[in-house]
Image 1 (cartoon, chains in turn red, yellow):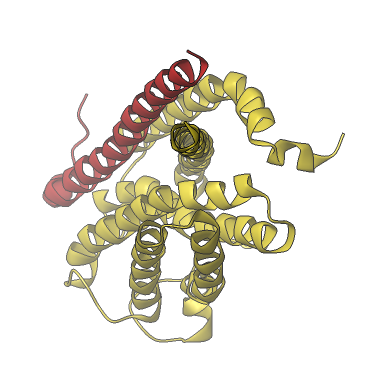
Image 2 (cartoon, each protein chain N blue to C red):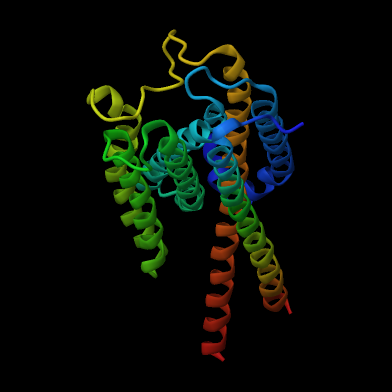
Length: 50
Length: 246
């Protein structure tokens, strides 16, 4: 299944690992912050009502 | 119905709630599909060998690095002219996405450049303008963090965004301005000339669609987060004022 990348296997694999890693870090960090802030807002709105 | 209605934070959050899962889902589909297609089912290039597979990450990320800044420019101009807070927050939300895309383009470019040019880096017009664009992104994000008053921060970052746009455009057209350096001309352009063979072109289009949709999804999600941060601050301020009165 894995294509034969010949002498360029290292650069190609590293390019994919680094790029997908950076994108995953961005998506996860954005998602975690979104969840944290949404919860904080719910708490703050609850306090302001009660 | 006017487009400016979406500048209302509540309306923006309401409208984007059903859009978010679709944009994330479609971007995942295009990205995974495009990358698998490009990596596993396209041949090696006759000159560049297997390194041509880096094109599916390098070109879309470079494209988004420039266009993210241009989106920030439009949002900044809307802020400066019409004072819509959502547009300033959208520009702020796009910066971390743009800086990541720029970093991906720089890293994949260096990894691709080493076997093809024999060097990780050259002070080539396109590479250098991209590095400056990356530094502008960092400066833009730092400026937002450094200023406490959100309106002043939005004003100053908007001005910085206008200045940085020179480098965003330069990084796109540098190879046309200066016929020197190692970097080749644009792989994709709006003119009729096609610089990429069909077998690489279609998976590349799928990856570009994936990157564009991922950018939209992330900017929507991050703008909603910034709107909520503003709301929390407003509630905290209101609570402090109520406490001071009692």
